[in-house]
Length: 266
Image 1: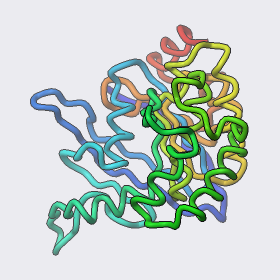
Image 2: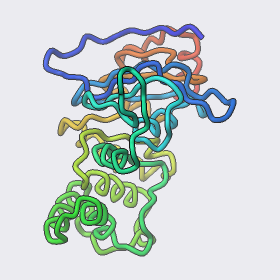
Image 3: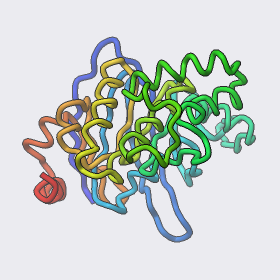
Image 4: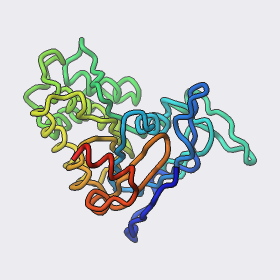
């Protein structure tokens, strides 16, 4: 497939946070990612859209080391993800090294994946205390700040079953932020929510973007892409079809496949 790419003029102070070069991913004989190239600068909100099965979620999972790429390279803050380069040859990192890299990358999934037997507060402090070995007192103080940030300070002692889907997703965002990641990945964070609950989650994400967090967001929320995104990438069948300024692409897509997709979701 031939893609059309319009590259926005980068800000002079922005440095690359994520660099994806020639990434392929196979599941058996199924070629899911077909040579993805993408750059996300520090502080940018990069939004990815596209139909189901286009490879969007797989790309995020490769960045976060939940999947191993079949070819290509991914760097986050100039650090090669998942591999060690020895004289031009790639060698798999140890599980411990991979866990260390993953700690710097927060991820929020479609499903909230909260521990059902833990309160919102306990969910947020679990990783900092168990993985980073923070004291419970310090982790609790930070967790309460994060729960207040996502508008749930009054739900700290509620269990997931006592929270709405939107509230659970906001707890999941707080939990990811508790590890103080350099990069946040969002995999269709509102797709499992009732429509009336979507707005609260998007508002938290907008505030996070304003704070300068680097974010890669897979979503069908075109309004969010238009308002908050610094770059927009349309993927289809495992390739980048079109990328550039969200406002330009949404208003005037150049590729017929992009036009077709947007006509269905707008």
